[in-house]
Length: 152
Image (tube, rainbow, N blue to C red; front, top):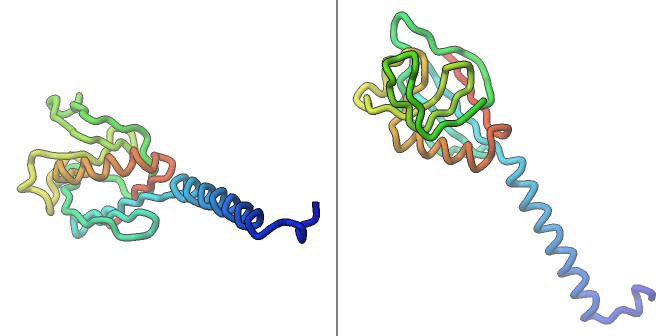
C-alpha cells in the first residue's frame, strides 16, 4: 500500500502511535538519566542539592570537628540504610544513612542545634527531615545517578 493511498484518519492514527512511542521513550530515558548531586561546602557548612541540574534545596550541615576529618572528593553512594547504628561511636543512631566511603555517610542527627558548624566525627550530619528527603531522592533516581561532592 502506498502512503498516498492512506486516509487522513489512518495517517492521524499512525502519527498518534508514533507520538505515544516517542513520549514513552523520552519519559523512560529522562528518569533513567536523572541526576542527583549533593555538594557539601566544608567552609560554609552547607549542602546544596540539585536534580538534573536544577536547584532542589540548600541545607545546613555539620561535618568533622577538630581532631577528625571529613574526606574531600567526589563519590557515588555505596549503600543505603534507613536506620543505622554506629558500631564505632557508642551505637549512635544514623537515620537515613547514605554511605559513600567506608564508614563515612550523610545521615540525620538529633543534634540539630549544632548544624551549621563542625560537630561530627567525619560524617555529614543533616536535619532528620532533610536527611529523609535526600535519602528518598537517592532511592528514586538510583545510586548510579547520584554524586556526592565535598569541597573546602
